[in-house]
Length: 271
Length: 237
Image (cartoon, rainbow over all chains, first blue to last red; front, side, top):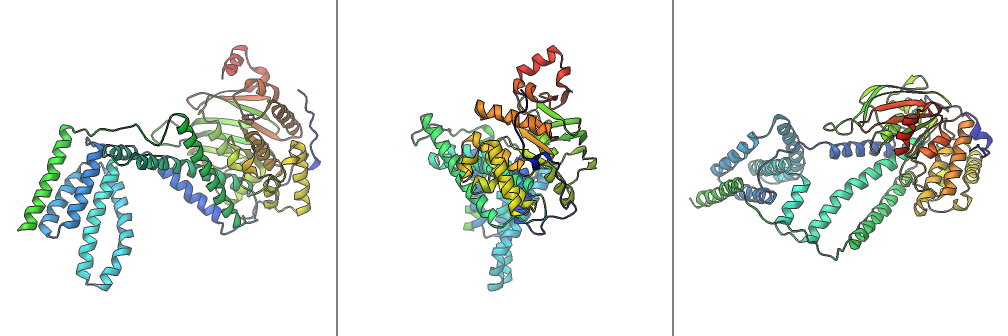
């Protein structure tokens, strides 16, 4: 087929590069956010170095709840020492990389929690504040360990096993999946802007508002499309996926340990 | 124009690389068709060429300059290379098609008269004058594809990269796009197209580059030098 389209003159010329040495505008929120978002997506896409346990997912959630409860209620140092000992034994099973990730996560969470606890130190006594901080770090340690041992898929499975309302579980599951899709979409939009933001002219600030608007419209379109696809496949507001509680020999051991800790708490609390 | 030496890229460290040890040279005025099965690395290569992704290993030269992540280098790439995404929907972020097409030349610092002229010319060239005041978000997939191409053309890049440009286009638009790409190539633009359709590629390109499922470049040859078995394999893609 022969070329038969007449191009305008300017399109037939090889455009000189304008001001190639110029730097892009010093502060550009879009560019800053692009870097941040890409970093976040890389983190999300990074292979999760999860410590595989033999526990059922629901038991991991129950175990976490019990440990948080015990750490919160425990007042006697002896009991806290015992609980911390159990926690350290569990930490011992992590690999070096997993331990590093655990420590990093715990560090971040602890720094964040200090912001909330510091006023208590200033308003009350320092000893009370430090005690509170110590217990908070121990509780956050439980959460960090839990996150190191469970995937999102297993967490959703655990919620199903624990008979959490199916609609809630379904909404959570879809939200997790689509958050990732929307973030990828946002990165592509920012890429598109970056590719056409060729010289010194700063991207206008209102462009950010436009992108947010597009993101809202796109997420709405995704949600409707998902709902329509689910309806077409027979979804009528109820999910038929049921996960049954199952207990292995290993689960009984963990459950036994949890029960022993609760009994120990009752004994120490009494005497 | 492009020179890639031992380029590799991996999205996920635990999986095989999305591009494995790619060596490729593209000269000005080339019309290169990239073919390969889904997920073979064509889109990843385009993102590396446009500077959106930085290869983990190897070196990349554009117009005989080493590409790095400095502003100066990225500016240069973005002025010289236009990229139409596979999913054009994400590429459109302005309120109207007219504004969409005007965004690039405005960013290049062109006077408003020149911007207006370019936008009008491209709207006419693509036959989408009627869409000028429409909201890009509400257009059909094919129309969005054309607007995305228009938004690249108004910047008058030296290289135009199109990732699956025929997806979602009607036969009439496909023919129009083929003619337009031929004209642009005849005007000296370097064009890179990823496509699964050998029939369309055969009409357009003067060179074909093929990736296999292992993300390796397995064939790089002028289109008229293809052997019968090679052509049969490409038609099966």
